Image (tube, rainbow, N blue to C red; front, top):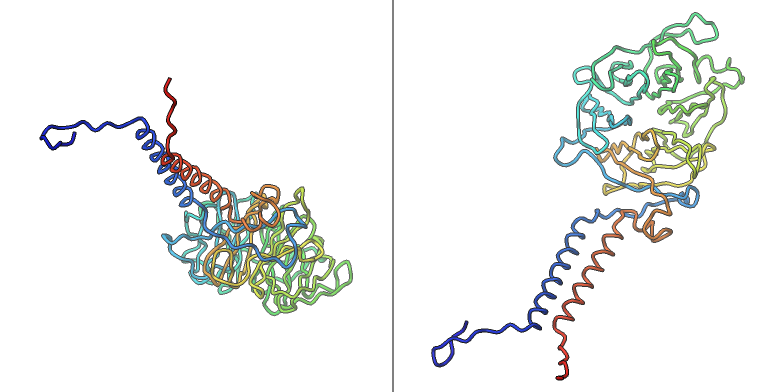
Length: 399
């Protein structure tokens, strides 16, 4: 009601057209709000994956940066140099903190292993069947064994002489560094003491064989292989890959210890991980290259199919990565981003599942395109409602 000149009140009449306009404007506001909410929920920008080889064309899928941990609310890592993936867990070797920090696969910390025991831990490996976590320690020159769930110390693994004269009988002091566990439970450890070599040990420490050391010339192939600071060790079903760091190469041996081939690479290969065969490819290896500060994807012949990462501090950028691990499916990769004091998580995305496929799909590696498209559609609908609300209404002809 509003006053008139005579002091009486006059009732304001809201026409049907005005009510209609108000409803349309309200709907427009709701659409704009929804568009804004979608933009807020949109994933953060992830820069396109750099590649020296067309890994997408070779594999039909692309690596995508997912996230990094620990989060800002969690104490930072001091020097993450090793990483191991287990069912629902990620074990991070923090050499400067002298512990193994355990996270779930979403990056939330759950426990700490080795506090008060470890000196300078470097690499770790898991025996899935026995539930044992092996950790090499540079300060104590030993391999510690922990229960991989409870974190309790189980003992130390040290080389023991074998009565079989075909095996290495040396059990002197050693300096274990790289380590991996085969599916049969044998442990492969690189030794960088006076004799640079790789030992295959049974779970009780009994030496099965030695490669690259004093016994090298006596192996079945008759090929002597001299290793210079073997760093990483990775075991597949039938091969053992050794990162021969100072020689800038990968030396490949058979599981029987016999020499197979040398991969001359212009890289400082540290951690390596084999990916399970897939429909797209088989026999792939991902390698942390501390020199190029990226991750290389190789085939079994050592051909570089592509690289991802690259030097920097942003999302998906690396600073002297030292190790890499894959989960059991090979679909998720964990990278020890040592210089940036974090662990990065990468996943594989099929090319045909990317929003636009091809080049557009690579540009949308972060998965933002659907959010952007939906927010634009909602905003356009809202704008359309505003136009309709203020459009003049045509008068109906009187009957």
